[in-house]
Length: 158
Ligand SMILES: [Zn+2]
Ligand SMILES: [Zn+2]
Ligand SMILES: [Zn+2]
Picture (cartoon, rainbow, N blue to C red):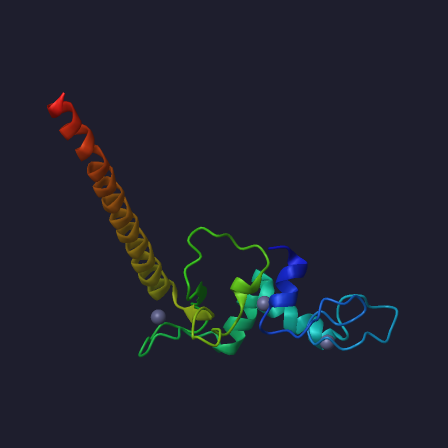
């Protein structure tokens, strides 16, 4: 998806795709100094939901620099930001995957975790990913075996 397509489809924004309108709130841009956003407010709002370094600091500020795991006693500022929906090596380029809050189905969003909890969560995500891969591989092997069977029968008949 291109950046423009993503801005049009972004559930946080209302942009129709028309040039000269704010690419977040879709208001007509009155001043000639701006092209993309109607105001600093809209520019900042877009940045902190789509650009990793802005999203990361916004998530930390929102969590008051404290790990969000229940009962965690880690010190303030011992905090890192986690994509609740694992990026799976998807990278940190700009996009809707940095939305601060989950979507309307409760999927995604950012959470703040201390270094220890972040490591635990990341390890669990990697484990789940490995399990999913292994399952996929098993299914593939099964399919291959099935395909081979008719060939064997054919050989016997010959
Ligand atoms: Zn705007
Ligand atoms: Zn978005
Ligand atoms: Zn913690």
